Length: 157
Image 1 (cartoon, rainbow, N blue to C red):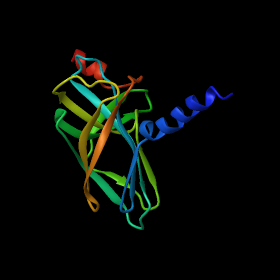
Image 2 (image 1 turned 135 degrees about the vertical axis):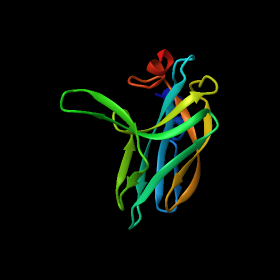
Image 3 (image 1 turned 90 degrees about the vertical axis):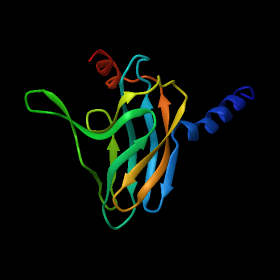
């Protein structure tokens, strides 16, 4: 039992790194991350959870980073026939007292024209631009490769 204590302590202290969050005003940004794309990928997806504890909606209207030539907000949808599509969006609403998840198959960030390979465990600086909260500096964690990422298909385009 005593031998397990250091392991348990290490895991406990590692949790904040794996699930980092940032609170700025009424917004909480939880674990901004990018699943590691293939080394040859030209695009990657960015994901996180954003909570708005305020009484008014705010809108994510942009993303800035130096890792790619272009960063856009996107939405993925599947129609009644099972056909998927991904389109840019002007803004993502974070409702008052609500939470929005940027995740596979929904809203997300597209990093297009990657300038260098992204390596698991690395962090990359960026900024989220909100209509009301303004520019918020963040760090994206490069997480292990995940299913449904954008790196594979972008590398073959």
